[in-house]
Image 1 (cartoon, rainbow, N blue to C red):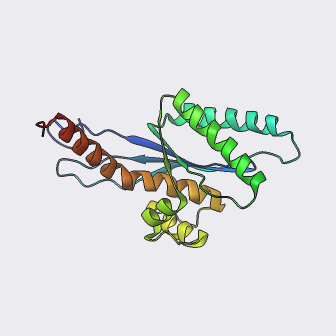
Image 2 (spheres, rainbow, N blue to C red):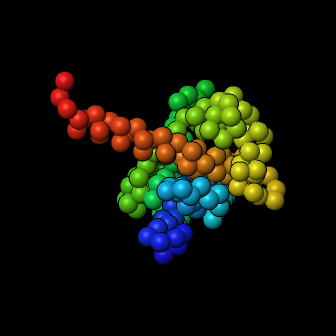
Length: 192
């Protein structure tokens, strides 16, 4: 037992994915949730980087390469949750298609690995990490560096974005749990 009499501390691994076919950012965070008088331990980055595929290769080969890399990452770290950026808008249709394809592979591999999948919009991520939804890439990188206690700015920005997704989930999860408990209590409460 860790943390006192009768206390069980559960480590939570969250994998943040900033989907992309040329550059797919990833970050695995380890965190111990707060509870019963304990404050949450700071999150710690266990893995942070970018999976790249060559634009010279056919799309189907690149998607297969991305799938294998994501599968290996999930097998190595066994995340309980995979947080993927929700694609809401892209000016370039070609980019939107490849981001959507990469996102689909990430979500499918997460489910196959037994992980929960959650999605957050870019504005939700920026608001949770930087304090406002209009934060720019550099502000997100600086906040990720600060929140994770990194010695230098996380590079490239795709890796920082993936870390921001994982941090966003850690910030939002207590609200999701409380909301679900509230709905369950109302559904099980007295009939009106």
